[in-house]
Length: 192
Image (cartoon, rainbow, N blue to C red; front, side):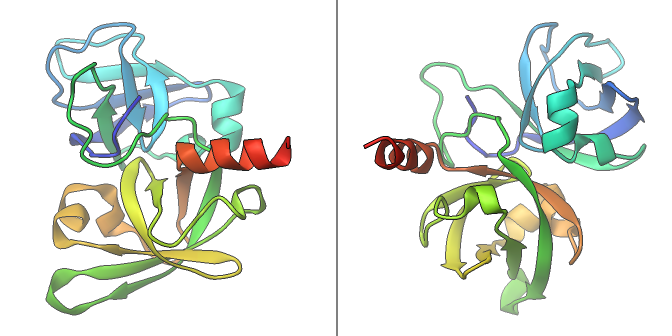
């Protein structure tokens, strides 16, 4: 489980067909640890002393997420799994990405803020609510508006500076994870 509060940015050092190597200065990481990479829960298979983390990527991960599109030198958001008793600064994020989606618009706002408009994939229609939570590339965001096929989130300068969301532009693809509560409510209503 994660909180959607990004701990560090890492850099892709190697992106293979089924593996990913990231350079990151995360201390005390060992094989078997869970790390969210752009919101995708991955298992560390080989931490090294040179601040490299290695991960295997399953066919399902490659199909549902943007990780298969990463290029050498590209920045990624990193968050370690929560421990019992940790503060949840964002919202509960499982690291199980629902879908990829396109950024439709990124609009600068006064004082360094910006508004991000992202398409809503078919499988997430009805799971995104105004003032609800959503994880975009692993970052916990509050939904500021919902349209028929899009949602918006206002980003603060800190988020823009300390996550990869600051470099997004229209047309880029991101990983989306709907709020866990929305998933359970939808499942309950469907099975009533």
